[in-house]
Image (cartoon, rainbow, N blue to C red; front, side, top):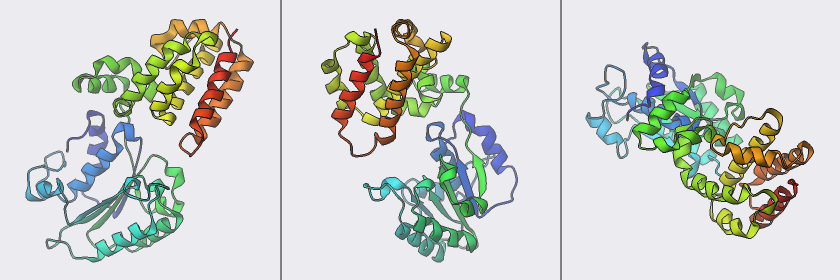
Length: 317
């Protein structure tokens, strides 16, 4: 598992000395390769023929085993849990405790637990995890990842070595897109906070929103029925996020004559900005933000969409 180019410096810092900790907390954005960074570290603790860079070799027996299911590595995340809550349950943590109590498949071998999205731990699960952290077995390592460190118990944070997962610079993000054959998407990086993995993962909704913009740029004259079926066929929450940024750019241009997210649509944004006023934009921004807060919950999405679009039409002269 190769690291992303922007992770190499942080990896070198993490692995430059032999002092090991029983628990690590990797903090960063998924779109910057957080999971890959933490997974590579977990695998390096099991590989028995590390490269000169301390990355797993990828060819030894243990590395080959890791491609399927290694008996010394347990990985859990909220995607494998109850889909109605997306929480990591106390039962999952109890299973991990039992895993640590088992003998390693090889004498002196490391046992590693990797928990993605640790902010999804229920309170009971977090407290159960804390007990493992307080009395870690020998040659055992616990690795957590999160994009929201404030959502974790302070007592868990204090028992972990915090590792920051770096974000790519704009140039690094552009180079990555070029190498992956997505150079044409570079202009859209601001939409995803310069995180190329998020940009690629959300490209279908991004392309859908680009077609919707063709109506949005008409201001009060756009046809709601023309875009309703398109919008409701996509990821509602992702499209709301893009709409937030569209409105933000109109608002920003009104104040500064600049755009941030949709630079490639600057002329359209300029025209729309000149046809509305600040007070109406502020009200719309509040409405969009309120919808975004509940966009992942079981709401009447068609009604929410209709109300939002009517308000959008009405801000223009």
